[in-house]
Picture 1 (cartoon, rainbow, N blue to C red):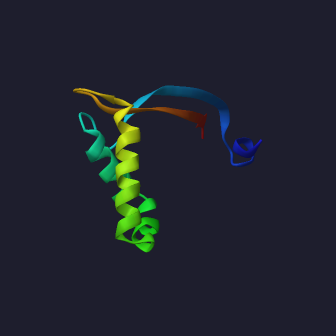
Picture 2 (picture 1 turned 120 degrees about the vertical axis):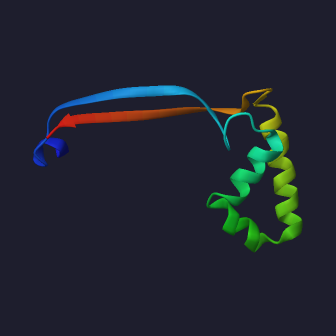
Picture 3 (picture 1 turned 135 degrees about the vertical axis):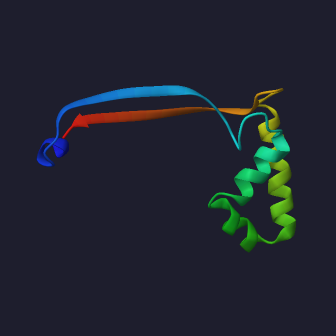
Length: 88
């Protein structure tokens, strides 16, 4: 309905599902934790919380990511995306 109103036809929906290396392929749990706590919206919240709390959270996130670490591949977390296509 929305696509048709915009002049699009032949809509299609595809799904991608797989594992994504958090912070890039081959990374360690510490590197992935550093990425997630500095390069995302979490960074501002951690800065506001102060260095002691930020250090505790970084340690906890690193431990969590260690459970998802595959040597040589990185910290792999499940991901899913809906891909919508249409003809203009």
